[in-house]
Image (cartoon, rainbow, N blue to C red; front, side, top):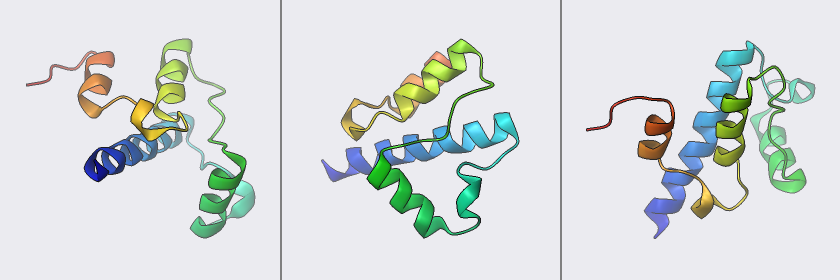
Length: 88
């Protein structure tokens, strides 16, 4: 349902914040602080921040979180498991 799609949109956002934290940079700096331009660019170009500077394990996690179809993205419980966190 729609809740599933919204939760998977949060997974995309989580991966972007994780990328920002790990790289110490903002995605798409060419757009400055204009979130509307970033959103338009991501939606039209189907791009996400480059996972360069990541180890292979983190890069593969980010890639699966950024899959175009939200229903194919992992849930947060799967992400926590992947990261080695206990999930209750």
